[in-house]
Image (tube, rainbow, N blue to C red; front, top):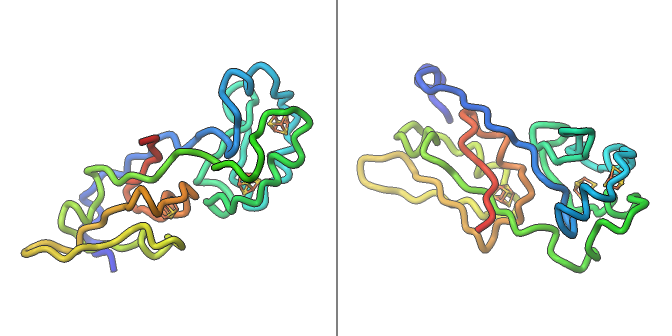
Length: 160
Ligand code: SF4
Ligand code: SF4
Ligand code: SF4
């Protein structure tokens, strides 16, 4: 469990969690042809798609259930040919833990690991330290479930 009295010493940094939808072919095609019709926003099973800048839909892992379930409904309802086939990889992104992680600063925390269905987050025991988290890029699906669970917003999506 997190030591809440010590958690207060850490600054909560909320970076922009918005990012592209899964299976999008490319950004240029998207901005040229997206109708901003909101069909994908309404269809999203976990309600992580929101209106972003300029009314274009983006994924925000702080919304709804906080993770993409890879249901493909956003692509199914889109009236434009903006999405890859479902058999393709939804995206290249993986989660990454930065230096503001409280466990890396020696305060016990396993919140992210508790959320990860693919068990991509492991904790290694080290001398004179609390268990240290690490994300396997091979096992991470980029679902985003770990992002809103972090008390200090230390998890970001990266494209390796
Ligand atoms: S695949 Fe499903 S859960 Fe994921 S963003 Fe699209 S509609 Fe939402
Ligand atoms: S359903 Fe397609 S066209 Fe409509 S807002 Fe979503 S991505 Fe754009
Ligand atoms: S993005 Fe999803 S699969 Fe990747 S580490 Fe976070 S919870 Fe696990």
